[in-house]
Amino acid sequence: MAPRRFSRGQSQRAYSTAQADGPSFAERVRREKMSVDHAFIVEWDVWKKWADEHGVDWPRPAMKRVAVEEWIAACRELGIRSVRETNDPGRLERYFEALRSSCTETKSKRTTRSGLGR
View 1 (tube, helix red, strand yellow):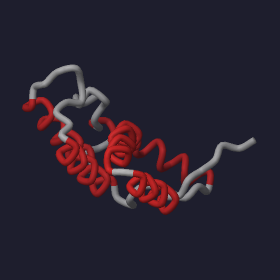
View 2 (cartoon, rainbow, N blue to C red):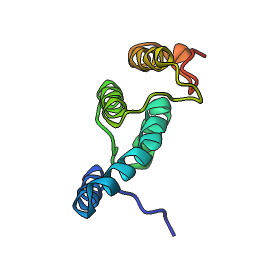
View 3 (cartoon, rainbow, N blue to C red):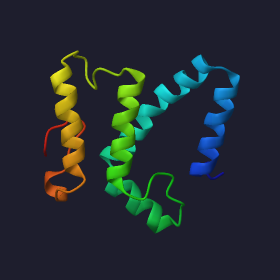
């Protein structure tokens, strides 16, 4: 059995339903989705290529830069203070900048999960 694929519209409808169930539930769902969104951003080229090769609708914004800015805005809105086991706010801001830079740099210098270049 093939895995079920959700379109961006289906994801938005699920989020809307969660909002109707109550604000705390919707916020928990949104917060938990952040790690999935982050994985797509970090491995953008790999997942985009896979989707193109398999004829799968791309469930993210067309441009990586838009996805990065949406993710950063959501981090700030949800009060996320770190992406690692540290509360150094400077490190989080440096990571945001590394993600932004990964939108324009070559693949050999793309950002890793740690926020440092490869």
